[in-house]
Length: 339
Ligand code: FNR
Image 1 (cartoon, protein in one colour):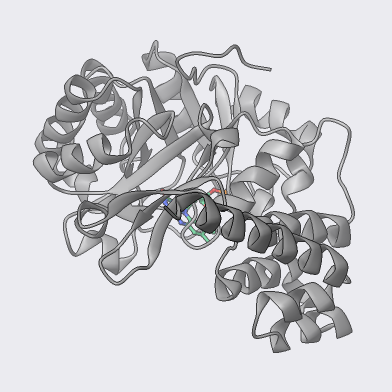
Image 2 (cartoon, helix red, strand yellow):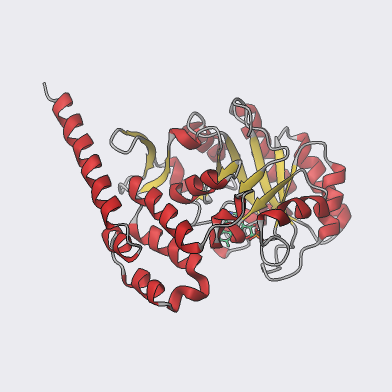
């Protein structure tokens, strides 16, 4: 259990940033199961800069809403001291505008410097930043001096050990609170083996916490593997993406839970926080993996709404009760706002 106050990145386990997966229900689920820190999905600075902050009294959340009314980022009190807002950016000024927009609702700001997907790199964001250390420095310095909460970044390694160490040392000097290292080159795919010696060299070279990432497929399958992975990389902390996406109970010290239980726990958060049904369904399908063609998988795939997803998982009663409670809150708020 971490002490309240400024978020610390030493000796933690974290839910990694994952597009579409790392929305509020998954972050709350990971916290329930024992993750210390939860990263949101990468959110692009240009889109976030257009959002306005709305306190959602019914859901008791803070929503960052786009001009087309889409909720880009939803957060709540429960995760306030644990949630890291990850952004995609290639522009120090815009990064600061977005960081200031969310600063009082999140625990830290992270910059994505590892995403090799075209939508990220073509704007000079994500892994494209790795070949522009001046830009990295400019963005991180601007954020570190411009906001009152910790700033971190998530990188991939560079081809040589020397280049990788030089880069992270330069990053450390900007004043960031931690660096997450996905131990693969930007050209490598998640199935490729990790470069543990690069990760060890980074851990040795820095005095700020290093968060090791990339072990999900072969090295980290259970909770007990987390500590082994930490030791093997020499890092202070561990960040999990796919292992957590498949079964978030990997964060539980007490051992894993059956997939059905995890899916139900996830869906309860999704219902409670009115998560978009397509996002909920996408996450449930990722959890099902090869079971996606099972009878349960087929029911989940066929569902078109939160009500239908609830039916698939036998949570109709929970769904109805939650809808009734939310409606009662809406009615009460409407009554109290009438003159
Ligand atoms: C990712 N990854 C990722 N990384 C990041 O910095 N921002 C992001 O938004 C995403 N999105 C994302 C979505 C999905 C579905 C996956 C599987 C991965 C990369 C992720 O955080 C991590 O670096 C890699 O998956 C390697 O870690 P694991 O999976 O071995 O624990």
